[in-house]
Amino acid sequence: MEHPNLTEAKKRIEKANQSASKKLDFYGLRLTNVPEEVWKLTNLTILNLHTNQLRSLPEEIGRLANLTILDLSYNQLVRLPSEIGFLTKLTTLCLSNNQLRSLPEEFGSLTNLTYLSLHNNKELIYPPYSMIKSFNVAKKVLEFCQTHPNVFTRRGRRKNMWKTLQLMYIAQVDSHCSETFGKLPTEVLNLIEYFAISEPYIESKKRKRKE
Image (cartoon, rainbow, N blue to C red; front, side, top):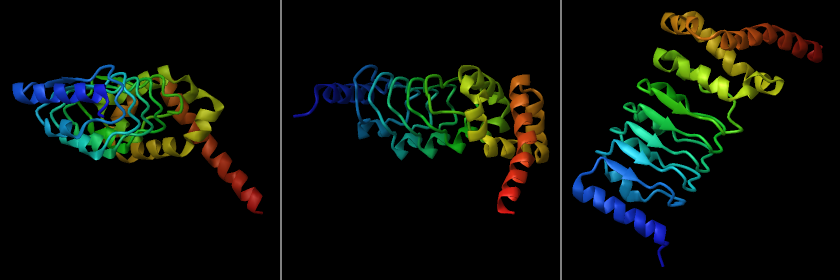
């Protein structure tokens, strides 16, 4: 017998399909999977999956290219598929209160974001460096750092050493990225400077061990 909440979800999908609705709300249904029929509703602009039990999203999420608002807060997501980068019309993306450990580099394609919520993802240390390439989301890096104080802890710094060095390299060779870095807040620039100072020190330690 089908779970009653899944039955309810399918009723809402059918109703949205028949009425050509651009909004689909699954708030609080405690779904463990998104019904396959959702990915056929390519006209959707708002998809609310707040307070469910999703552990992952399928590649098909990329079909919903017209989404402007996607709420995935209060789930159990560990990772996101790279196809999230196809949702280039997104202005609001809510990912708070999950179990995310990293974000795909394709996040850099979400240049229309004006609101990004990432708090209460305890294993998530730093956003992908592709986000820095876009001026529109540079301020989101600050917001991330402000809501993730572990970025500035010893463990957080060491864990993200090499990613940040890659950021520095991009800033040096990409003029647009350099302009973006110039607008980042002092605390983020200080974090980058820390990595720059630490990198040769770590390399020297490695050489000494080999000797």
